[in-house]
Image (tube, rainbow, N blue to C red):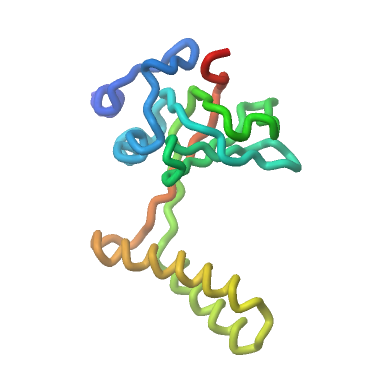
Length: 162
C-alpha cells in the first residue's frame, strides 16, 4: 500500500514511453523528489551539458536554466554532445544520494588543511567551501543530519518535437 501512495503522490504511473505533455519540469520534480525516490516517471528539460568523454551523464534544466538535474544515461546508451541546448523528455527512476553531516564536516576540515599547506588553488577551495557551507546551513535549518542530492537514472529519452 505504501508504494501505491508514493506513486500517487507523484501523480504519474510508469509509462511505456516518455511523454512531454505529462512530464514533470525539473523544478516540479525536485519539489516532490523526496516522495518519488525509486519511482518511474517522466521529466522534461533543456540539456545544459553532456559529459563529453563518456556521454554517460547529462544535466537538464528548466528553461530559465537555474535548477539542474543530473541524469545518468540508459543502460548501454549515452547522451551525445549535440543534445546541448535541446529540450528532451526522459523516462527516469528518481534517485537520492544523502550527504551526511559528518562527511560535510570532514570535507570542510580537509579544505582547511589543504589551504594551510597551500596545496590547492584558493578559488577552488572557496567554491567548495561555499557549496559545503550551504549544505551544512540547510541541514541545520531543517534539523537533519543529511543533505539530499537528487538525480535520475534514465530508462529512455527523446528530443521534444522529433
